[in-house]
Image (cartoon, rainbow over all chains, first blue to last red; front, side, top):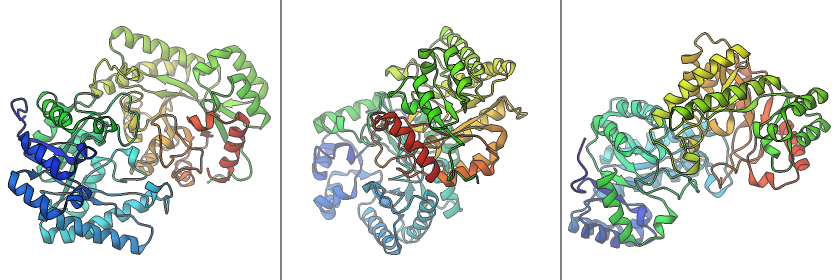
Length: 287
Length: 287
């Protein structure tokens, strides 16, 4: 297992972690100042500053991407919606390529309209079929561009509104169906917050192997957890066995960054510098 | 599929649904008044009124149990704690027998102490081993008494503190390990709130079959869900495909009650009569 204690060369910051403190250009500056070598930015953050400017800033600082967030949200109420989703995913793939991302992370979506509280339908099997078809269509384009797609299984508590792919096994079944040859064009993003509870986690990480393990995200599961979306913990503050799980992905061949992604009203309420410094310290001590 | 529209002979009320409105003896009276034929009471509610009095009241009203809540919480910080948990489960089995329950529902527990925010350990695999051993030990006694044990998989969002059995597949793996002969002594309680999201749900219900399907619970998954424990929805107010899922369990041979179990600050804040009347109406229209 790689030694994280001596430095943070393998740390990446998912920029949602400090999205309420700083715009993306400031985040990149603050990361560069701390010799953080990788980030994973969100599309809305990129758009706000301008993608050309972000691309230039990345070149200047030498900071690379560990992923790009995000594509997905395939299910829709009607054919026009499905078509719009595919268009949007093509744009996300183009942006990921422009920024030199190693993969585009897919939060696949679920019941269309569920985030507004009024789903267009309640048939999660239908959503799963539309997700499969949407990934298949996007994959064609992604292969042309050379941009790997990383399906991120989301915690089952987000199954209705954010992603109907909810276990690593389910994500890998999709990979097997759509990229049977294990070409590297399709894989998974393993975010421990979403999958730590799964009794099949270790076995499915082995099944994934290096070709399918495209991204690795860490945070922690708090006791108690007060919100289904924005109450993630800083690594070490919860119950996830971070080192054990990292051992699993590394044994399976994963050699990429350990990306910190914390959606948390608590951490968004602290100074950005304190958050980044804590991420570095915890990366070295408990991740 | 059984027709629920004409009456509510197959409705059961899990008494947690109105636990803040009434003590258990009043709940039984109010159910009898509405010709609700079955309930599933909780141990603390029974203890508060007195088990002999509740047993007598059940005989007098003709109300039967669809289950008894609950045994479980096997993992512990030390040997004394494990032993105390087994003692407590034996008492729960005795109470279930005294009340004529068809099964004792097991909420198996997880990291010991997690409900207080300070777990004694963070190794969920260890908790799972202790759960398996605890069920095995309890099953010996339950077989002597003739009381079936129903493992209830809980939603993964409750994996740290309430139950480390989180999918129907995992529960059935335990059944296969501990009761390979499918004797009927060990099975599952399928609560749709906990398992509705699972892409393997339909297949695992088939796998369970009539011998393993000991209880069936309904409520609904709300959009948004504001609390990890006490924000369940009344049937029809959320996104769970209730009729489709009931079709699956009935096709697999389940012939028992459809038990309403709603933990909800919203519904606990309404008059008990309104809650029961709504349960009856929704049972007939959307369950």
